[in-house]
Length: 231
Image 1 (spheres, rainbow, N blue to C red):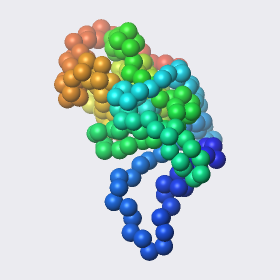
Image 2 (tube, one colour; image 1 turned 30 degrees about the vertical axis):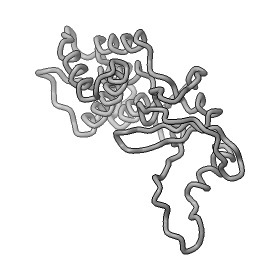
Image 3 (cartoon, rainbow, N blue to C red; image 1 turned 45 degrees about the vertical axis):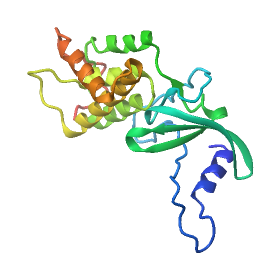
C-alpha cells in the first residue's frame, strides 16, 4: 500500500475531534488489499492478479471490481485526502449498499475494469460446457484456489469455478462450503450477465441456471494431477 493510500484510510477512520459524535453521513470503504502470495506450510501458490487493461471510466459506467463484483460509477471527482489531492472514482454496489473510492491512478493495478464484451462473456459460457476438472487435493486447498479465481475478476476463471462445482442430477450433493463457493461464483457471473443483458439479477440467475441445465454432461469429471490426499 502506498503512503498516500495509507493516509487516505487513516483520514477516513480518524474521529473528527474529541467528544464529537460520529458523522451521520454514509461511510466509505477503501479498496481491500490485493490478493497476494499465500503463506508457508504447503499452501497452494496463487498467482497474483494481472492488472486490468488501461481503460477510461465515466459516470454511469458499469464496472467490475475484482473482490466486489459489478458496481456502477456514480461520479469521478478531485478530492483532498490527508493533504493530497486525488482524482477518485466513486463506485456504488447497490446489493450491499457500499460505496468504494478508487484513485484513478490506481484503477488499473487494482484490477478495475469495464464489463466484459459480449464475445468474452460468450467464451465464459462456453467454459461451462467443458468437463469439470477436480484436483485430487484436500478441499481446503481447492477452496483457496476457487476463491482466488472468483476474486480475480476474470469471467473465464469464475466460469471455471461454476463448471467444476456444478452438480447434475444423480451426482453427490455439495458440502456446505462447496455450496457457498459455487453460489458466490454463480452470483458474480449472473451480476455481469444482468448488466450486459440489461435485465435484473434474479432473471439473470434463472437464465444462467437454465443454461446449465441444458448442458448435457457426457463424461465424468476429469481429475487433474494429484497433489495430495483428497479430503
